[in-house]
Length: 457
Image (cartoon, rainbow, N blue to C red; front, side, top):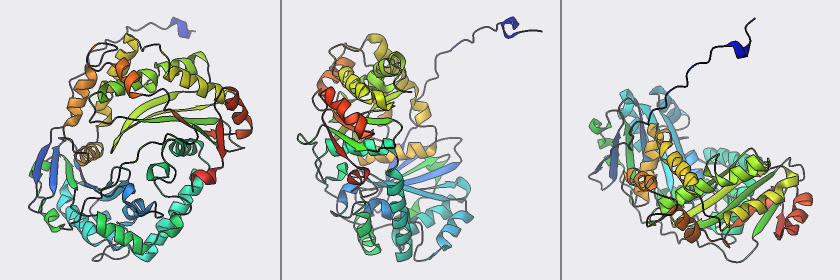
């Protein structure tokens, strides 16, 4: 009988260089109403995405009504004036269209996906939603119930609680970035249809908005329907939140039944407009952004404390945020946090091979990040909303591709040393406080212990 070892060995396949890739080219125009439009032709993508970026960030919510921006987004397609009740959903379903949206610190995004064959009908319905969403009492009440359920579910998710704890440590108490995007336990109870309609009327306007249409043949699509959306308003004028320099460095959310310690380590840093942004992205990748990165090599491979650790930097409306995320066995949770902080503040520069791997990964993964019309449309809307060119991605990837370990104006090591302050890391942990708190204290990390309800309030 032939065994596994008797099988003939096949030749190793030849690995060829990757094919050249660039972000889809964009066509920028302006409707007679003044609404900026970006068309993104993507041959072969027969599902069209229409997305509108709105100047409706969560920071524009009235104090005490946190969660309002997301509530409006989630309820907008429940009913409209011309199509009350379930009629709007039925009209969308009849043409194969679907609605989706989100609200965040940079603004709200709402969009419709539809086959190109029924685009015109979908555009009419989309404009109807923008102009005449009902935000009816019963629909708002149902979405508020869903928000309550989501908060209840979050109270049992260690990774989410650790992230909220880190936000509480990083941003001033009560500031919008320190609170859950969906709202708090107390603010959700204050939300109502009247507040939702007021926020919609003030923020769902053409002021600072942009329309992105992506897919096959979008360059020839008739967008005149969007000329019927004329709601105007004023910019949101949200005051940027500065990170706190007081308060606890470590916040520990106590979950006595937790089976692991979930950890988030964060600090505020620079954003996309900074000349060192590309180098910072590569530095974060070399430190913890790939499986071969330094944090993974030590915490996962050498120590065996985790299945994996991640590190990334993402842009904010004013600057950026660097985050380390991981989950560890409870008995080594404190050691893992201390070791991660040691690596993040080490004087040992990242090596050329570490930087090469991180740089190649960042450039190589881009085609996967933007392989759908939805991903491309969302990215374009976010870029235009931030005041950047729709094709900024190509310039950014070129900058990333040029980053070296120590050479060049902005090297990975310079970005690490100058853009990540060793004294500014804030830590959020969720796990068994009875075991973690004393272990953290032994390592010089005094933790403020809270319960899940406190970080959700």
